[in-house]
Each structure stands twice: as C-alpha cells, then as structure tokens.
Image (cartoon, rainbow, N blue to C red; front, top):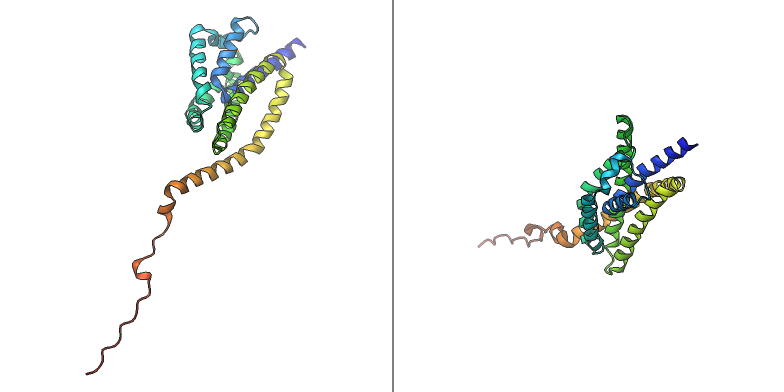
Length: 224
C-alpha cells in the first residue's frame, strides 16, 4: 500500500508542477523551494535545485514583476505571449525532475505529460486574458490574476497533500479544457479581426475605377 501511495504522490507531483507552470511558473518554483527548505515536503533530488537561495531569489523577483505585469490590460497578453517559450519547456523540465532518478523513458514520458499540461493551462490562461482585455475596466484583470495565483497555490498544495483529490480535479480540468479551448480560439479570432478592421478596414475597400461611371455618348457629326 505504501508503494501505491508513493506512486500516486509521484504522479500527482509530476502532473501538478507541469500544470501549475503553465499558469504561473515563478510562483510554482518559489512555493516548491520554500516548502522544501521549511521541511514541509521532501522533493526528489533532481528538483532540489529549486530550493537553492539563488533560484528562490530569482523566482521571487520574477514573481514580483509578474504580479504587476499580469494585472495591466494589454501588458498581461504580451507577457503571456513571451512566456509561451518559457512556461511550457520549464513545465516539461520540472515534471521530468519530479520523477527523480528513474529510467530515461520514464523521465521522457513525464516531460511529455508535464509539457502538455503546461501548454494546456497556459493556453487557457493566455486565451482568456485576450477576451478579458476587451473589457475597458481593470477589475476583471485583477480578479483573474489573483484567482490564478490562488489556483496555483491551492493546486500544488492539493497535489502534495491530497494527491488523489488533485488528480480527480485535474481530470475535470482537462475535460473542461477540451471544451473551452475551441471557444477561446473562436473568440480570439473575432478580437483580432475586430482590431484588424480598426487599423486596416479602410484599405480593404475596393475603390471603384474611374471608367465605371456612365458617360454620355457623343452626338454624331451633323452634315453641313
């Protein structure tokens, strides 16, 4: 039974760090490192690096920057666009490290699953922010950003302390993600078409040719 519990806990940690990295990578690293240093959790040796003081300072500083950038309409979308190339690979690396010193196939499988979950959660976060930014008031951005931070902290806590509960919630998240992503994509396309119409709508209108206007036929020359 102990072996089964350890396996479930390992799977929850692997999927949890991948999923959380797609939403807020720096909060994920900072929380794991602090909990490990405080003795509340024991990370695998390959993940011990996140508890290094230098890594904690870097993650804490970047989380401080993201905390404000993530709450400014427009800036949050640009920030998410840049972090497409950061959160997903980092989620794969953290997931691979979470399985510890196992065989290469296990680490590769963990990296694939972790990277995929990071890509899914990142796509949901970034896509929803594009739609939220269509509202002129900033309250929605602040609410969404704080909710995402709480979701990451609560999700990691559940993955570390109640792995079965977390895995059940993750299954629900994946099902909702499959339903939500096509709707987000359609909404994003409408937003970009609207923006393109604002900046280039006049150029798309075809100008009528000068010869399209009817001309009066010339009268025949009169015989003198």
